Length: 80
View 1: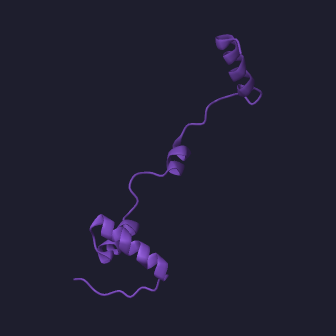
View 2 (view 1 turned 120 degrees about the vertical axis):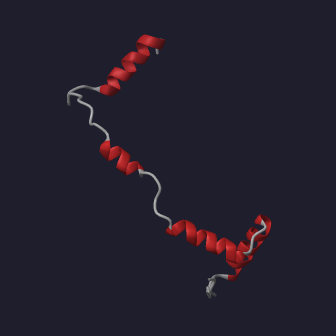
């Protein structure tokens, strides 16, 4: 069942949204309803934070200088 909703927004924004909806060949109501549907959907998949937290921490000695090793490898490979 559809129901009415009153919104108060800036006139200039309303005009731009009407123009956008017109270009997309949908009503402003459909546009707002579609937006509301998207923002209340459960999050799909994992966030980057979830992925990073599950990553194994590499076993690198604290005194190892990876930056120096990188540049040394570049020098060996390209003579930089």
